[in-house]
Structure formats: C-alpha cells, structure tokens
Length: 155
Image (cartoon, rainbow, N blue to C red; front, side, top):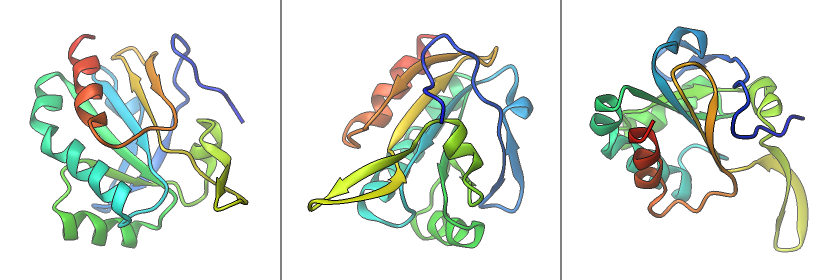
C-alpha cells in the first residue's frame, strides 16, 4: 500500500466507468484531475458527495479539471447510482481493487467497535502534469466539493 503525498507523481489508473467507457490518467493529460474515493454507491454520504461534485461540475470544467469518483462497486451499480441521482461526474469502478490499493485508500476502519477493511473517503487533486498537488484524507462531506474546487481553481 502506498501513501500518496503532495508533490509525488500520481499513480496511473485505467478503470471501467458507469457510462460503459474507460477512464485513464494518461487520457486526461493536460487537465487537472480530481480523484475522489468513496466507500459505497447509493449510501447517504456517498450520494451527497456525488451530488455536491456534480453541482459544481461546470465550474470544475471551467478550471480545466476532470472529476472522477472511484468506488469498488460494479459498473452496473454505478450506472444505476448515476442515473438515480443525475450525477454529472465520471464514476469509475475499481472492482478489482488495484487502484484503491495503489492509492493507499484500502484501510482498516472501525464502526461500533468492529474493525474491518474498507475504502477511506479521500480526495486527490492532480495537476496537468500528473503531480499530486493536494490530498484530503478522512474527508467530511459537507463543504468538501467546494473546498476542492477552490484548490483546483488555484492551480
């Protein structure tokens, strides 16, 4: 597992997307990229986060920034999730879990005293050259998308 830090080259990825396509970091060269990891599609916090990023998608695009939400859910579930909530961000499936491992977001979690492994809610802002410029760990959803937008606009 890798600890992704500011200033390092972002790990590459190639994932299936909710719309039936694929998204790769190499395919986004020349753009800034927000990669946000969330635990599970169609749960309250993950839905709010997707809606918040979607509400700001025009402003992210104006800042030449792509927004990609990543979970370990299968593509079919992501497609239903995107359609149900009219999400405008790219939703990518890391069902094989190689991306969550490479980005260091597959972590031990605790809930009601029970320990288990799961996806950490984390966000990474990558500049147009593929360098990680900001890292947010253990994200609290409220106001997060707006904070990420401000950081993207400052690149």
